[in-house]
Amino acid sequence: MASATASEPGVPPIASQKIAAAAQAIDPYNVSGGTDEHGNAVAIDYDRLVQEFGTQLLTPDHLARFEKVTGKPAHRLMRRGVFFSHRDFDKILDAYERDGTFMLYTGRGPSSGSMHLGHTVPFLFTKELQELFDVPLVIMMTDDEKYLHTRNKNEGRQKPGNTVEDFIAFAHENIKDIIALGFDPKKTFIYTDYEYLGGHFYRNVSEFESMVTLSQSFGAMGFKMEYNIGLPAYGAKQCVAAFPSSYPELFGLPDSRYPTWDPAAKMRHKSLSKIMTLIPCAIDQEPYFRILRDRCERMTDPHPKTALILSKFLTALQGAGGKMSASDANSAIFMSDTPNQIKKKINSHAFSGGRETAEEQRELGGNPDVDVAYTYLSYFLDSDEELEALATRYRSGDLLTGEMKAKCIAELQSFVADFQKRRESVTDEVMRSFMRPRKLEFKGNPNPTKPAAPAVEEGGAANGEAKEGGKDGRGTKGERKAAKLAEKKAEKEAEKLALRQKAEA
Ligand code: TRP
Image (cartoon, rainbow, N blue to C red; front, side, top):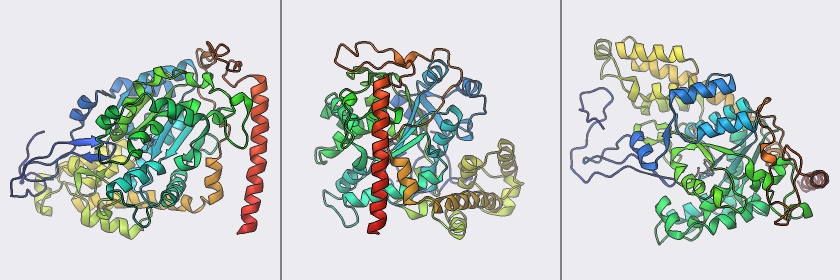
């Protein structure tokens, strides 16, 4: 990275004592750009990260093809390089053109009950993809992962407010926040691991666990021998969550769960293993999915390698080198913040790329590239022209830091206020409607070139599986009838349960 001196705009003061520099460290449990020999945080070097991880960069060609396939301009987060890297993104576009559909999968670790601005970024992008492609989406809430991780951080102790039940409650709060971002209930399934894992999902977990050695898990995640045994095993769950065959009911096929166990669910459904998956996520999750991709084709029912589209992190208020973090209240803007809190945080904490004084700025200009207010605008302001004009005027000294911050404050206040209004109407009932395993309704590509692709069932009958006919992969007539019956029964049970809960309340 280019070295900078303190007199340049946007360069934080340098600590004077010399200590050992720390290297950049990024994995699902650490996100740090490292420190220099003075102990100052260094901005994350994404080019190096991409090299290290061996992922590809998203190019203008990808954007052009994306726009051609969807007929719509690419989302601003893609245009502006927040989503900047991928694996097999082209193959997802191929699958959409050819088969007509794919599955979207993303998730969140509910480490607390409140979400901040940074947490909304992958979800906003995912929502846009769901709308553009009209495909099913699963959102995994890893209450189990966060329980294990938190307990590990506390040297094995369970602190008050950190029980399994607490993490389930955090997940529920987060789910309501996610719903308030505007997902379509017809094509979105949201679940917490503690509540959902079982059935065919758990069969995939076991099979996957058997293909990952301890040393592979430790190597990819930076685990140590002192860690609890839950963490290295958890990864298999996050991985097989990418397989459509983990969620037969979303595709109208039966699962093997109490109390609606259906004989047609004796085997996992081979037809579902043909559907491709795209995971939009921040790049710290890539180590999991590297392990996943290497094993997709070794499953009993081989799955195509999962595709990834990867984002950078939302910069902390303090500037590059850190990401917004829920555990540091001053680094983040929370989705529950009041307009006044937003204003105060931006005004007093947002790192500025401007000059010391207004006169200096008028004369020499500021640096929008390191200016946090401008950076946030680049995530949330949709108009390219407006954004471009802000940058140009900032550089020329025509726009002052206070003005950039005011623009940012107004934009974030309106985003957060709209969110809070929608959040009010997300009741427990609404939440549960997203969490009920049910057949999702999606159309995908209206004109696929080879829509029959998912129906090719080799060896299904040979290994004892009920043959899944139907060129759309919806299963045989018998299976569909059984699934319908099971669904009706489940609905009745849910109704009864709701009535009972009402009576109890
Ligand atoms: N491990 C993730 C976290 O801590 C949660 C997660 C599970 C996830 N599955 C995912 C994130 C898929 C992105 C994509 O936040």
